[in-house]
Amino acid sequence: MMFVADQGVTFLGNFPTPQVPVPHNGASSVGGAIMLSLAMLLEDAAHNYPDRIALIQGDRSITYRETDAAARRVADVLAERGIGIGDTVALACPNIAEFPIIYFGILKAGATVVPLNVLLKAEEIEYYLNDSGATAFFCFAGTPQLDLGAQGRGGFDRVASCKHFILIATADGVEGESYEQLLAAANPTYESVSTVETDTAVILYTSGTTGVAKGAELSHSNLVLNALGCNRLFDTHADRHDTMLVCLPLFHTFGATVLMNGGFASASTLVLVPRFTGEAALELMDAHEVTIFAGVPTMYWALLNALTDQVNVTKLATNLRIAMSGGAALPLQILTDFANRFGVNILEGYGLSETSPVATFNHLGRPTKAGSIGQALWGVQVRLIDEDWHTVSGEDSIGEIAVRGYNVMKGYLNRPEATAAVMHDGWFRTGDLARQDDQGYFFIVDRAKDMIIRGGFNVYPREIEEVLMKHPAVSLAAVIGVPDPEHGEEIKACVVKQPGDATTDAELIDYCRQHMAAYKYPRTVEFLDALPMTSTGKILKRELR
Image (cartoon, rainbow, N blue to C red; front, side, top):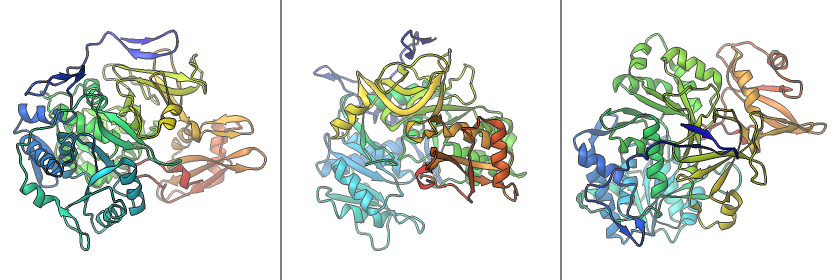
């Protein structure tokens, strides 16, 4: 049952606690702390479903038994180098089988995982290795289009405290210990190190789109409970045996928690997609009878644009059980178009690296409200606040989203002042603006930093983007504020048109003028062939300004 408390805090009540799988060798506590490891999600699936396929990547199919054994070998490699509890290990790897194997191997060794974006350059990698205090670095060699191995080695060579560079596959001119050779000689029965629920399991670095990137410390309990909360939300369990298409990069919190961790917790089969395209995703959905798809809005846009007469949409829709979106606001037009073509409503959710990440979602079995990020996840409290942490109430009131619960990070690594700036009495302020209706559904208005102030009026870019996306000429749109001597900021729309469309900027501006208040509509429109995006599919508005 959903409650909206008098003080404006939304939470879930009267629900049983999700059953945390207990490792088959039992659990214990030390000094009041509960022995808990995120690695148990893989171990439990391997113990109960050893011959079920865990990972599919191209022609490779790997069972849960084989995945767990390989992760144990990784842990043994680290233990041989004296790496364990209190140490951090970096991992830069695309969506190939080695990512989850190494990720869980690091956890089995008792160490902390530091996932890195595969598009980073040497100087950026140097920063993350230094800031996290990584003692070892697993790095994918790369491809002709992705020189990750060379960039990784370049960053590693500048960090004296990082002692071990382990290269996944080979790359010309890049030196490092061979991952494949190390695993071949390692122990596949290595016994996992015991950790407690408050130990740091993963350090996730914020996107760094503004200021210096900070490492959010997430504990084992943060991540275990968030994965189980997601499984409860989507009715995902081992008896159902879902097949998940993993297009979201696993170095990103959405893909890691909802698909990888949640997938292992439910003994699902994960179909890994190293490089996303709409065409490739549709082919894999068909070939593997995918039941769960998760993506950011631009991925859904790509799927819709990849549909041709040769695609058996009826078959895809018959298999597809869950479609979920996060990472950025989902345009209403994409939601509507996808439902019309696939017969499945996209469930939109919300969260951040600092919240493990899921905080709210549209729930199965409840009404799905278009444009809403849904209601609070099990065990999570959400409210809207002003700058002084006071609760903002009223259906039409706009406030900053604040989150409290088991999913909120321990803090920013070695940054107590930055932590204190966003944490108060267990609450984490997100920087995102929203409103809430009388049923506890939240509706994102915009990022606080993206809000445009034009002539003293607050203008929320997402509202304008929604209007633009309804125009038949518009394929994708992003709205930004640009400096203006008269109004402080002026509104500009950056638009990707449908192929071959001849609509002019003046026509689009006039269309917006007819559909919104005078202070809101864009005064300029720039047509682009594509919008700049991060590797996770978020539009980089800072590059448009």
